[in-house]
Length: 175
View 1: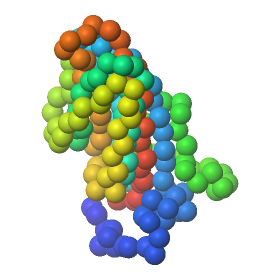
View 2: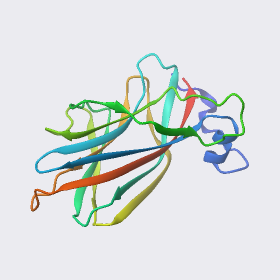
View 3: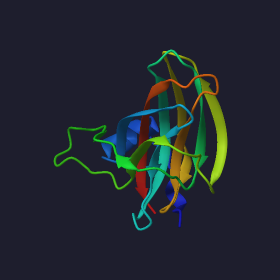
View 4: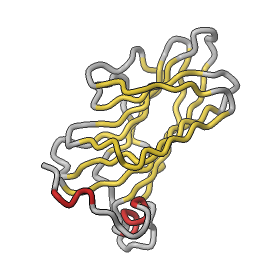
């Protein structure tokens, strides 16, 4: 259940406020896809985490010359072999000991099929050698058991493999 003071407005930007509290995290994944196969990366809130996930910012970086499309999903079911990214950290590294996220940043590459269930909320196109950045200000809030997901679609005109980098910034607050 969401608390009444959830809309508290600090005197500094919300991501900075959450970072000072040790609740803001950042991470990056690198995945390969193409030739009819997808890749996805997402923030997964475990069923008994005790926190709400606030998706603040995401980037999708295309390191190849081949453009592709990607979709943003909420609370979807995914296929493929999910792997945790090793590239994540609290944004405030001055806290000792370092806080650990309860949200799991997972990704999968060369996946046969798109997500199911959940809601595809919008899509974007990522040109070659470009990074798309989207600041969402924490407005996508996922409960325990939910997720915020980016699904990269293979281009229809090329069988070549694409390398994508997906990064997220998020914070966590108790339910």
